[in-house]
Image (cartoon, rainbow, N blue to C red):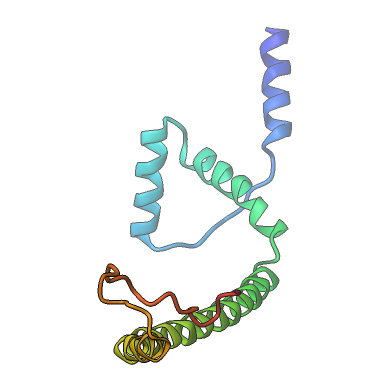
Length: 135
């Protein structure tokens, strides 16, 4: 009997403070249903939920969001610069490829002027240096 009384005293000392919460009846029913599914009392369920929620206090959410936005802006600016360079390069290449007939005519003129017999040569693209390539 002494052991049971000692245990009751210990349990009472651990859970002696009361916290009263006001909530809508539907919220109370939802908590009770979740607690029942978890196999614990509504008090235990709420206690566990609140104690698990403490870790949120350790996060400085507004500052984390500010840092993330700054990083997003930095990455976006870098991406836009790279995209501008790629589009510029694509325009240069399109212009270069658009001058193919002009380049072929120039090669024919040079070959005719040099007196070389070019008619038996296989037709291959003019080996001109593409823009942006190093020689």
